[in-house]
Length: 185
Length: 83
Image (cartoon, rainbow over all chains, first blue to last red; front, side, top):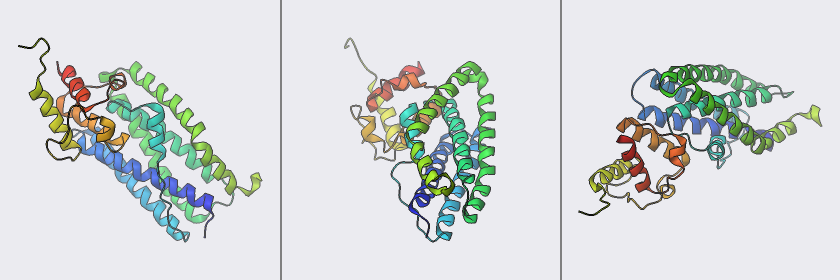
């Protein structure tokens, strides 16, 4: 059986992937057909798969996922303000996906990473890199409509919010990660 | 003719559209209802905003959202952007 900190972390990843899948699935349903809708459809399918991978991983480790109230994304929206249009949604997604990659990378670097977890990260991280790439391309494609300066300002605004959420919320993630790392004790 | 007449038909149509998008029964969204009571989460509100923009060919920005409290406020905002 895995320890409480590890179960909480894996469950939080799973909750976050489920929230992402549901949100982008709903958005993909509402957007007009086109390149952004196509990539968003692939994106939400990835996130749903990632939730499945974490569910399977937790099961392989002999546990059941915890039911966590709020996903990281909920806290993000509270701190950054609601995105009001497609460009703002893509901007907050870009910043968020980069944060996810950093968070996952910091977990991967914890000594003694269990093979079940390492395999799950391997499967997910390639997709996450593609998420950053397609969202970046989509933002560039919107520059003519929204203005490159406005997109840059929006990204800056969400980066500031990201730092605030990271300090306030991910501190718990870091503490739980540190608790997994016996070499830091 | 009242000095400040409102186009109730246009607002009713938007309130009906909101009810549909939120999966609520027809006629169940009133102008004075708080958006916070209508949408189950922030994500749902963002989805509603995107749907309204896609349907009405308008664009909202974050500043537009600051004064939004009720469903009527949102209907009025959409109407003002359509002008």
